[in-house]
Image (cartoon, rainbow, N blue to C red; front, side):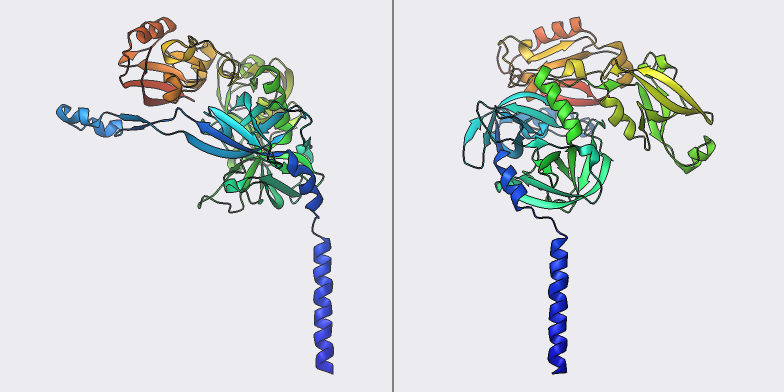
Amino acid sequence: MVARCSQFLIALCFLISTAAFARGLPELTDLIEQNSPAVVKINTVERNRVSRNSMPPQYQQEIPDIFRHLLEPRQRQQRPVASMGSGFIISDDGYVVTNNHVVEGADEVRITLTDRREYDAKVVGTDPRSDLALLKVEGENLPTVRWGDSETIKVGEWVVAIGSPFGLDYSASAGIVSAMGRSIPNESRENYVPFIQTDVAINPGNSGGPLFNLKGEVVGINSQIYTRSGGSIGLSFAIPASLAQDVVAQLKEKGRVDRGWLGVGIQDVDRKLATAMGLGKPAGALVGQLEAGSPADNAGIQVGDIIMRFDGQKILMSGDLPHVVGRTRPGAEVPVLLMREGKERKLNVRVGALPGDDDGQQQANAPAASDVGGRLGLVVDEIPDSLKQRLGVESGVLVKQVVPGKAGANAGLRSGDIIAQLGFEQVESLSDYEKVVKKLPTGELLPIRFFRGGQPTFRTIQIEED
């Protein structure tokens, strides 16, 4: 009898503790049911991808000339490449938000809703720096989601993702916010997004899909994962909704994004530097480099200053500064609090425009005449002096627009690249570029050297036909 009572009490305690635990978990069914209709699956097709095989240049130099022709890059046109991602509808007339990398280079973009409706989508504008893109479909009374306030999210808060991981349509996963304001530089070593880190299961195909809070509001756009296996290991990163709304509004209005620019090179302040600089603890962004004639230089900021606040926002780590400056509209005058030789200083800075933003963005599907970009499909211009100083280049031409499907696009060139060599001739100015392009032969693979983010790159380019 005693044994049976003990078993009964153990079972009762287990049921009570299980019920208590269940009451502490969020109920997600209504949230998912109400918001899934506005989440879309995105399928893309890229028709103009070209593969090239070649030996690295450093090894080609060791090959005798008589054999070198055997190692020339071989180019072959591949079959159309299909890929997929996720997105969400933000207006009932058909505006859709997704990641730039989901639609980058795509010749066809098609979205599918949960009720099996399908629409061809037009790319209104893209912003590689934030990895965001705005699409438009021709529809009416479409289901939509609501934006939320990502600035109020706290670590430990429950969040939900809906998307199409590995093509499994409209899958939901949940977890918590693991950290805020993560700095993850992109491939150009730029850092303009303070990512939300979560442990939500995000996998390939989830990119561009929404991250919801428990109110059913979009607080992030799932963008990246850290993985060693290709699948989720509990480290996923989302673009904050507060940043995304500003980017989307600019893309909708003008097809590009304007960002603030200060003109400084910065680094973190460690414990020893903090002591030497008269700080009580490590904090701020230490100015290690200053571009002559930049907004920071004009405002009186000096090398060795530690920027503690920018426009009223605390700068705890150096990575915080690009996030804040980038979201400041060019032309705005903002206060800056800094430490100089152990003393506080206050300055006002008139923020400049980040070089490359005002001339590097374009509407991806904007109609273009067949002669736009000339033989290479590239619209180029002289390089502004400020950009030369920032990137450390002395000559060349700046790529302002890349026409899809033409030689420049097939070579992998992007807006913002700086062309320094075409064929075997140097390009030092716009007039050089125009002369060289006229002489380029048709149907031959030619070397092209350009700078991206200040780093030189060699590739090959081929004009298929005039």
